[in-house]
Image 1 (cartoon, rainbow, N blue to C red):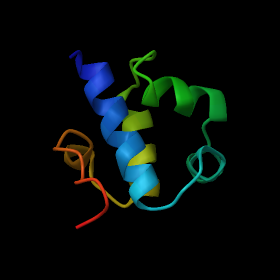
Image 2 (image 1 turned 180 degrees about the vertical axis):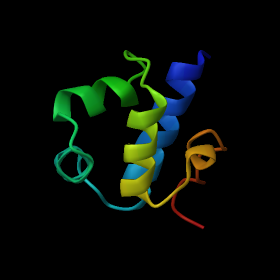
Image 3 (image 1 turned 120 degrees about the vertical axis):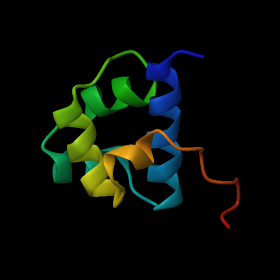
Length: 75
C-alpha cells in the first residue's frame, strides 16, 4: 500500500473515530471538502502543512497520522 493510501486511511479512521464529518474537518482546517476527501482516498500527496492542519483538527500530532489505525468499534 502506498504512503498516500496509508495516511489517507489513517486520517479517515481518526475522523470517523471522533465523529467528525468531512465538512467539519474542512471548515476547521481551512481546506476544501474535496481536497480533504482526495487526501483520505490517497488521491493527493498532501504537504506537511496540510497534514499538520488536519492533525490539529483531529487532535493528533503529525506522527499520529502515520501510526496504526484505531481498532474497529473503538477501544
